[in-house]
Length: 287
Image (cartoon, one colour):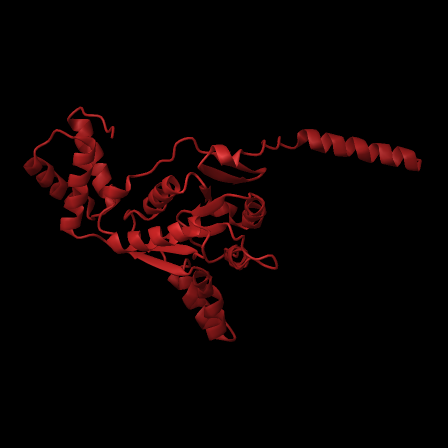
């Protein structure tokens, strides 16, 4: 076979592989949308026409963490230094809802300059690719949100996240912050940390390697289970916001019974109860 035939064969193979590859999506128009979902393969930003979010005023029992996150987000939107944030703690207490509400509130004040990008946990290894896209988006600032971030014992992608948050040689883009929510303060299960402590040659160094991931977040914002008074305040806030026609006594008694059957109190449980009330009474949740 001649050299020309070899080159021709290689060109045909390359063309066939290109046809088989999935089509690369057109670049998203960052200026036309406020929120996106990041897809790692093929890499691209998918616009989100309507963000599933809760009004800021409906988030109860998290006043201190709310104020801290909003202040950090406002500084970032103004082009001032801001920290990555880890929102950790009790399930259903509004961690991701607070991020989306803070983005909406601050973005409205800053004329649409602030963008929200959701990256899925399984796509964390592609974060450097997303960071390169963000770095080139002059004039806009990006909150990258990873909801329910955690790592299992056999998962080493946390090392990729550590490197990405540090930014490598180029550094983290100045127009990006990373917000994550998790039920775990150190993002890793306790038994994973303890296993490193018991089996490593240098236990102290091994544990520090695991827990140092959370040190990349300048803000640690804790969320804790709410009291019954806070739970009822959430219920009343939802009912008022959506204009539900139900007596306060009936609403309160039903809420107490509802949380007893669930065995927990949280913003998520409150919302589920409100949906039940609206469904039983034939009312729509439109606010």
